[in-house]
Image 1 (cartoon, rainbow, N blue to C red):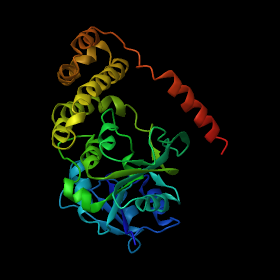
Image 2: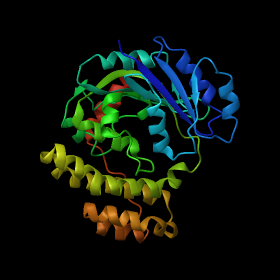
Image 3: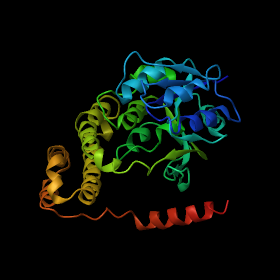
Length: 323
């Protein structure tokens, strides 16, 4: 029988953590365990957690840890053979554990299960439903690696991972500030099958922290430099040599998207603050001429999606709204 452990890393989410925990306690199929790791919060988180003593396990790392070190500490404390993390401001629908557990049984070679989700705002209102339309039910290597070259195809809090494989690959890489989840998926890619469950299993809270995208811009660019300069090439060299040529093409597309986003978020006078990181990304993507235009103040349009895919996606979401 599959034992699915759920870990909730929390730091100063006292406003939302009660709702998160209640959603995990209200599952159609109960998880093997629910463990909340309080990363030395300074708000009301500790008081909220006291309400759940005896119903969940509450732990605290020895010291306050950076994001992905905290995730790794929490995973080390989970005893199930499969593990899942839940954001401390997010909500699991009642089918969350059931759907993930069902996906685990699709193949003995499964190392990750992922599913669909809703995006909600700070008040809990649904702003978007997100099915992963580009994914097949079963994705084997090397497609697992290939699909992640342009960005993560999964949301961390609506996935389950085989713990034995997580331990084998070293869990979350700790050199990343924000994209450690993306890097983890690529670390897992050579080691088994990714399963997609076509269900909405939870709600991811977004759009409630003013200016967050702008504040994270430099860190995201720094992570992308690491991914495309060293991290992806190392995986390709070891496991998928035939995929190596795709990395530079992917870096080019990501750079174009990144510079379009940055040109809308930053005034010309603010752009010097990310010039070094963007310069490294431009070198990897042969995009120096775009960088020069960006530094001169140009605003770039968002790259247009394939028109056929755009029409099909719109039609699909319209049909799903009636289900």
